[in-house]
Image 1 (cartoon, one colour):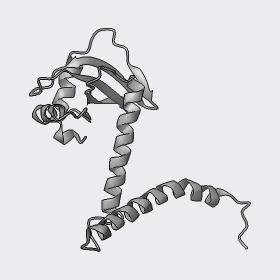
Image 2 (cartoon, rainbow, N blue to C red; image 1 turned 180 degrees about the horizontal axis):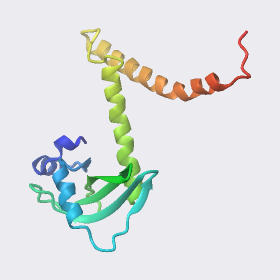
Image 3 (cartoon, rainbow, N blue to C red; image 1 turned 30 degrees about the vertical axis):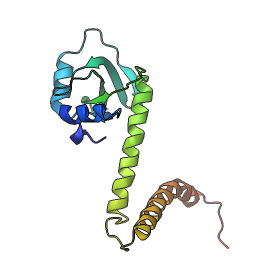
Amino acid sequence: MDAGFASGENLTWLLEMGYCPNTKAPNGQTTTAMCAHLPKGRYWVKVGENAEMLGWGDYQLHGCPYPLTAAIERFKVGRRYKYATLIHYRDDGLFPTLPAWFHHYNQCQTIEAGNKEMKGIFYIQHLMSRSSSGIRLQALFTGLASKVVRLCVPWLKGYATDTTLKLT
């Protein structure tokens, strides 16, 4: 879910509708407040090549009466760290490990990047049909083109660097 939609009121509505959101905090103020109250002797868990997270447990977001799980993530950029806050809710009480949470959240971001690519590079917003079936086909083929390009780039780079390949 987009962080811009993650206000306490919106999260409350989603939770009451039965959803289990996984998002970033709606603004940097949440992260700043959480960083100011980091526990002494904190233990950062490595979750990616350049990312670490610190779990927060039950967290009350302003405007949301339900307990959420939050975690601060940090990335090293140059010599400084950049921070963000992930927010998660599970109604079954199960909590993923921090690396699993980070990986799952970033997979969702990859999907969002693909959707943005479909709009920006492949111009899905310029519909070429008025029928619902034609629109569905255009969206399907646009998504397929986007995925094929993404999958073929590493394959093509392999051929571009292979000097033993002879074209006949």
